[in-house]
Length: 180
Figure 1 (cartoon, helix red, strand yellow):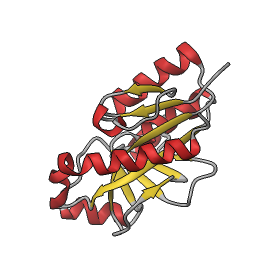
Figure 2 (cartoon, helix red, strand yellow):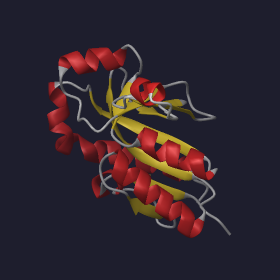
Figure 3 (tube, helix red, strand yellow):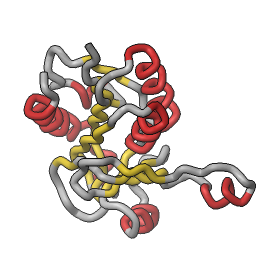
Figure 4 (spheres, helix red, strand yellow):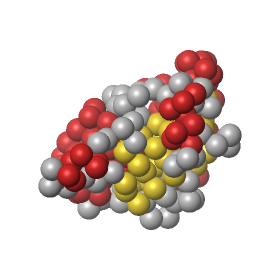
């Protein structure tokens, strides 16, 4: 029988994942997370992928969110399309809470980048889009569950001190929603 697969970029985000759930620590960034998730899907075909992790808030909100849209914010989609290629830079996630998540391989702490992203999204992370796209390609349901750890500004460098509180909130969400 297939079961959920919980995916976190780093072990610190998964500290409070309940026993009984399969956990994959994918590594940081889009390439690492997409590769690890695709490999895990091929090996065991989970019933759903639950991508838990921290995120920076671009709109000042705090708390836990389940994004409905994930954007690939640092991808040259216009150039790829100009060359005649397929350029998927947005994934819609059914059942989300309406939040838009921007994903990129850049740790956002620069005010100019933060402001530019805030015009398109409420949250920013480094893996969500990649996990959602790998699941979309494989036909496996996905849920992104992100807890705000910082405001994608100078406070982002304090992530190590904030990750435990986020991991606790993510663990609580899993206990309430993962159908253990």
